[in-house]
Image (cartoon, rainbow, N blue to C red; front, top):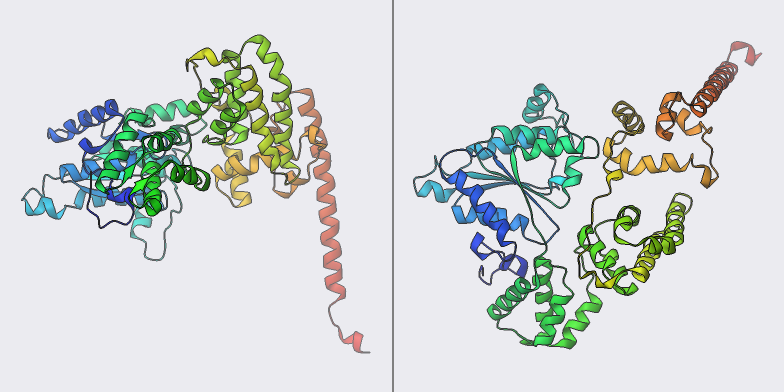
Length: 499
């Protein structure tokens, strides 16, 4: 595990260099080894990709580098900070097929050595699985004046193409596979990727593995630690290996060769934990806690924002909490929903605090702490549905282009605002067409945004009002144009004006 003392960053110094050095997720590592055996046999395996999903800090990226180092293979890496459009991914595949490590070359195995193509954080790939033309890909790859394709255009489609054709192992990492699948047709997208890649879900590392790693690192650095201090350090860690090693390095600065309980307590109060707990684990902790403080701590460290957490609570409360309990917390759930809505009308960010704290405290008050952890958390099905009226692909594309943004940004950032400015409960009106006119929406677009069927009575009424407003708008535009033109004509200088 030790890489020498030359690295200032302990997370790099003690990064595992082989699969045998990795701690935790033993059953997952075995599946990785089986996948590697397919490549080492000389025959290209049916599934040419490996999708490693799970929370940050559990060793997904480290595993990819360990595979390359252990096997003596080269590695070509494309991470989330770079453009990962169709052309960029195609270029990575080309480099992967041409690149030969010096080690393989010196051993005379340059023609047989593999190149690992690592695509880090593929859940950050934006857009859908729509393909872009081969002409645009080749033009971008050969362009000297600047790329034709920008951002992640066509990236997911080219990723599928790579997984179908590559002669080198492709390893992908992600924190949230649902973001990779996308909201619309997510099951179809998931199945398309899983047909050509092995999906292995990594979990947070357990206390035993954390303890073993901590002692190994401290022994290597000749630093001692009190048993109770080690227990406290592990207890406050959510299973994040990288965070553990960083904490150990921070403690060593003032330890003078030995870490005590006071040092760990001081670190706990000063270090902001950058790791987040998987939403499933967060809800399990909240439902199994009869302490409002502990429940809130679990939810605040979750990888979901208050809006999403409320949706997860609403869905899972039905199966976890008794009928009487549901009745008792209904008021808190309703108030939480109302508080979250205020973020559309003011800048009171405290609404997010109460939006997550109210349901959490209420659930802790009625929770059954005798569950012994036996709580089943399921994904809210209503978050997965992609057939709502407003999810019209053509509408999203047109509005995204009109507003100069991406489809993903429109759905995530602008869509809630469009809903809020027409929400009756916020004092708005469905018959306010001001914004629709400004951004070039039609009456049917306006109904699609509001989720109102155009054949319904309300829909027909709004369409009629929209048509009347459109005529009025066109007349006002024409009058305004005439006035401007008339003023321009009057302002022209003539010979008569000098008479």
